Amino acid sequence: MGNTVLILGSFVVDVAFRAARLPAWGETIMGSNFALGPGGKGSNQAVAAARAGASVSFFSKVADDTFGQLARATWAAEGIDSTLTGTSEVATGAAAILLDERSGENAIIVVPGACFTLTPAEVEAAAPAIRATSVFLAQLELPLDTVAAGLRIARDAGVTTILNPAPAPASLPDELDELICLADYFIPNETEAAILTGLPVLSIDQAERAADALLGRGARNVILTLGARGSLLRSAGESTLIPAFNAGPVLETTGAGDAFCGAFAAALASGQSAAGAARFASAAAGISVTRPGTAPSMPHRAEIEALLNRS
Image 1: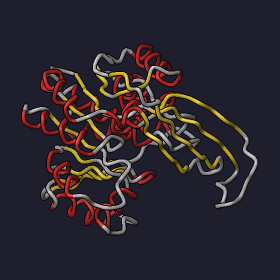
Image 2: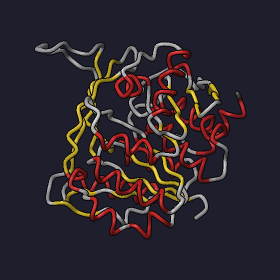
Image 3: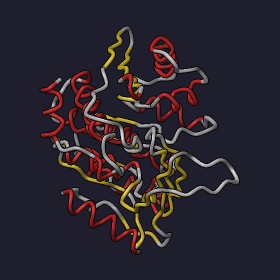
């Protein structure tokens, strides 16, 4: 079980457009660059965890189409075991990513496609693989009942569970409270924490209050990622602020959260403490924002360790 991470999540193809600014509704502007590549929060986090040194299995669904073939080629190239990933009759999904080339900020629309056909029954059928891993990581780009099934199996088996509540739902269904309670580590960003709690997250004090609200809903540990301010690790009666790491000029922030979650899972699986894993993950995210793309921006373990040593 040592150093193994199983990720239940999405694969979509990222279709990214870079421009001097984001357009307003009804407006057409000229862009400076276009790129198409592998994406989806689950798949990105699988790449991040694999490059960070973990033995990774990825569980999803893709179609037998061009985008699905890109998915399987990506996982093979990264040494990710995709045995659990099935084939759907629904087309593989895509994400439209609009990038502000000055700030690196983004706006994203995801159409999940094939991965959204993964059912709780199919997750139950994969229970032996889930029970055999050391860390289980999920996000919300799958149906909530499917995510809940995976977290429930992992929790019952004593596997360390991580939930990245992205994208955060605009409404708060009852299932989400169960998901929060099933997570050993609940990792939202500022926007997601604000949506889930109804509280502003504009300062460290406000981040602590939002984290406490999530702890009150059943999370065992909350790691609230705060962009350039780093991240806040919060558990009952304890708070640790993890610094951000400056690896160079920010080019694109799209994959930063996925870099953090995947690297955090890998570090936990290797035996690091939560605070040590969060520091490792923060360095991974700091490197990823200096590079274009999502999966291609994920750093390798040696790069992360070099940045930590310099800092």
